[in-house]
Amino acid sequence: MPLVVVAVLVTVFSGGLIYAIGRGTGPGPADTAVAYEHAWDRLDFATLWNLSSDKLRDGRIRADFVAGKNAAYRSEGGLARLVRSVRPEVVDVSGPLARVVTRLELADGQSVYDEMLLERVGSAWRVTAYHLASPRNGQI
Image 1 (cartoon, rainbow, N blue to C red):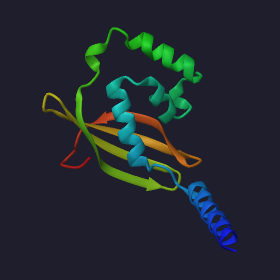
Image 2: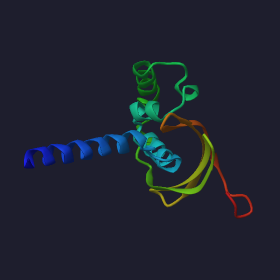
Image 3: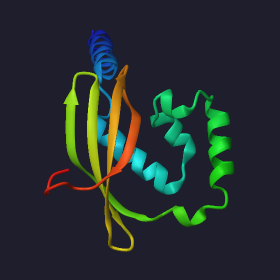
């Protein structure tokens, strides 16, 4: 009899865990934006491909995207590891679309803002566009 109880408990627990994982929403748009910034700072093009929408992938498969970016940035080592910290300043979500403004604190003490647009694809957020932004009248 105890073996049956243990089997039932294991089955119920396993089913609940599978259900919870399947219903998980994944990282939010702010998490994706921060990861995107860190990937650029490390020149981690495999991660950038994962976090980018098809539009930003330039129609390339992952291997071609990574190889092309590595070739383009091979001599640009001075562009890596410039960011001390990244934090989301503004997060606006409207259904499957989001706008995130991140504040990048650079190693030299300067701050830069990056405005990103993201779209929800399944349970993941993908970056569709980005550009450096500056505060206007104290607003981002």
